[in-house]
Length: 321
Image (tube, helix red, strand yellow):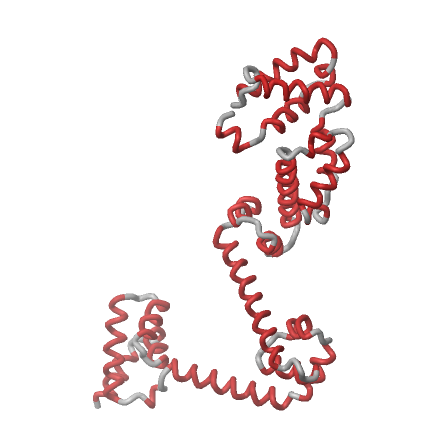
C-alpha cells in the first residue's frame, strides 16, 4: 500500500466502497470471480497491492462472499445507520460508534475488530463535523462561526466551510475570549460577596459595571431583583453618571485645547505657522486635522484653518500687535 493510500483510506473501507458500487448480480454465481478480479485491479490502480498479495486478496474475497450471503454490502448498512444520526446522537463519537457496532454485530461482527473500530469512529467524527457545519450555515449573524469555534473546529475548516476570511474568524474568536474573561471577572466579583444577600451581590456587580444579562445569568437572580436595587441606587447612579459626563467633557476640552480668546499671542503665531506648514503638505481636511491633532494645535484654530484659512492672516496680525 502506498503512503498516500494509507493516509487517505484503509484497505478494508476501500474494499467495502468498491463492493457498494457493484451491481447485485456481480455479487453472486458465476459473476463473483470476475468481480473479485475487477475490484482487485481497481484497488491496485488506487495504490493498494491486492491482486498479488495473498492476504489482501483473501480479505477481498471474504468481503465479497459475505456481501453475497447477506444479500447487500456491509457499507450500505453502515451508511444507513450513520445517515439516521442527528447532531445530538453524535455528541459522543465513541459512544455512538459502540452503539452502531453493537447493533450491526450480529450481521457484521468483523466491524468490531480492533483495526476497523478507529476508522468507524473517524467516520462518525466526520459526520459530526458535517452536521455542525450544516447547522452553522443555518444560523444568523455570527452564531454559526461561534458554534464551530466553541465546538473546537479548526479555523481553516471554518473559513472554508462558511466561505469567510481568517480575519472574521479571529474577530469572533476574540469576542468569545473576551466574553469568557468577563464571566471569569464576574465570578471573581461574586466570590468577594459570597456571604452577602442577593441585594448586596447585585449592588456589588452593578458598582463594578457588570451587565444586567450577566448578573441574571451568573448571580442567578431575576430582573425584578435588579430593578429593585437600581431603584434604591438611583441617586447614586445619577451622581455617577454626572461625574462621568463631567470627566468626559473635561477630557474633550483638554483634547481640543483652549478657545481662540484664551490662546496667548506668541503661541497663536507659532500655531498658525505650524498649520501653514501642514497645509503645504496636504489640502485634505481629514489629513490636516489628524496632523494638527498630533501637533497639539487647538481645535478652534484647526476649525478656522479648514473652513476659512484666510482668517489665519487676520488672527496672526492681531497676535503680532
